[in-house]
Image (cartoon, rainbow, N blue to C red; front, side, top):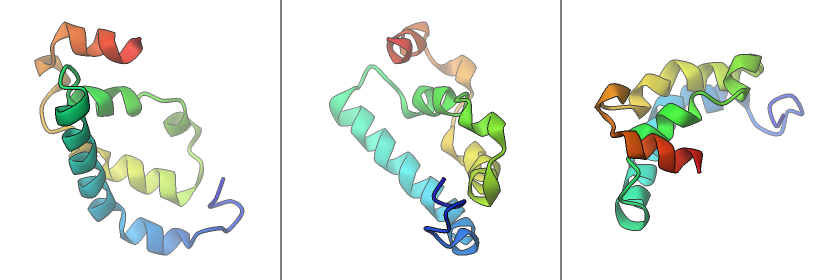
Length: 90
């Protein structure tokens, strides 16, 4: 919505997306480590990337995030424990 309303510069935001994704991954991984050690950042991001917003195809910023998204998950989702998915669903 911010892109549609021109509340942000979409081209500039897209240009920074890879750096943002790296920063976001580090931030979430650190948070999980300190506050929710039973949840891995990889499990969190695998669930996040299944959100409906990514299927809507809204704008350049979402497309850039989707393109950069593989950098969010560092290990295969099959490597996560069964309880991580359960905890995220709760």
